[in-house]
Length: 160
Length: 102
Image (cartoon, rainbow over all chains, first blue to last red; front, side, top):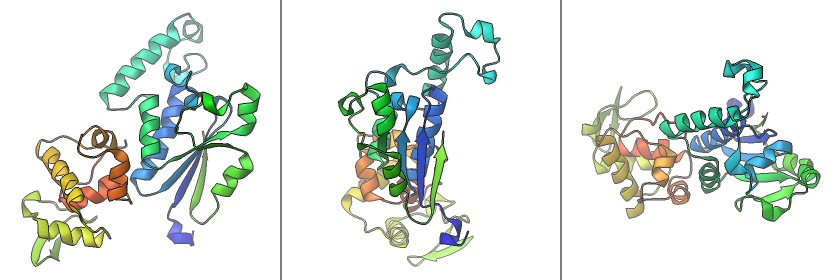
């Protein structure tokens, strides 16, 4: 811990999931880093790409099945409309605590200097094109490129 | 604790934020900005005025609120106060450290 006395200089946050709670966690961590004067870059891979996909980012849900924190029986969680209901409830609460929606949050992140990178492999897998993505996305890059951007003392990586 | 700055004695907490806003004046703000390596311009002061006005109204500050303030947008806010803008600007403004996560 001798480097900068253990001070965090840069957060490299990898988002691999598209459930709303995971997306918000990643966004809050990236924005929180910038608010503290820490650099932040995000790498969107696999389902995490949905958080920057123009046609999908407004329609992200929380998971009602396989999510013990929902405290509802798995069978009920699978009923039609349950995810929408739970998502709407969560969105209402988020507005109350001044949490922006996904698109506005992306605007805040880019204005704050957070770099947004899309994973090339996952883009190919889902047949997405750069123009399908939110306009603030910096580029489509490989995992090797992403590691390269994390070079330097005081960089931390986080996988969500 | 006491801190002597710009020929005045002010009360600050352990992180250097003023604990009594009534002790603040522009000379103190300027001296605090120098400590934060910021050279104040009229734009900086407009933002400081806004933060102080919100504080007086007991409105908690966040980056999102700054963006919706019509005083400064988030990009310019980061350009004016590049390192930890909300914290730095609050310290210069003599108001408490913001408790917001967004």
